[in-house]
Image 1 (cartoon, rainbow, N blue to C red):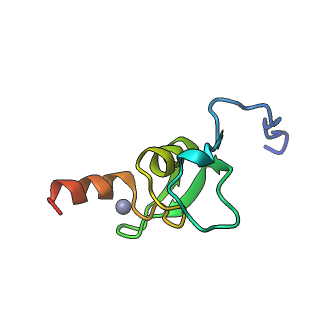
Image 2: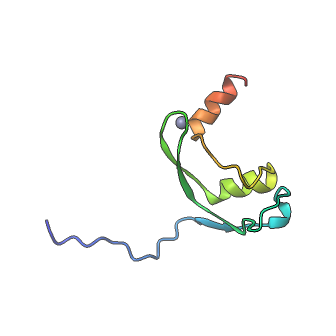
Length: 89
Ligand SMILES: [Zn+2]
């Protein structure tokens, strides 16, 4: 023990954690600071307390395809969202 150096050199690019935003596809909003890029965002599930990452790609889908407002964000983890859907809201 004592010799191990962390092997982090900052060149790890397994996947993109940032995605440029297409603001023209976002739902209309009055914000002075529209989202110009999406970035992986950790959050804690409101239902079960599990920590999950809301990925940049998921945000792009939510804001530009589903037209979610830029004021909304993920509050539930994937399994809780699926459970909700199955429950037939
Ligand atoms: Zn959950």
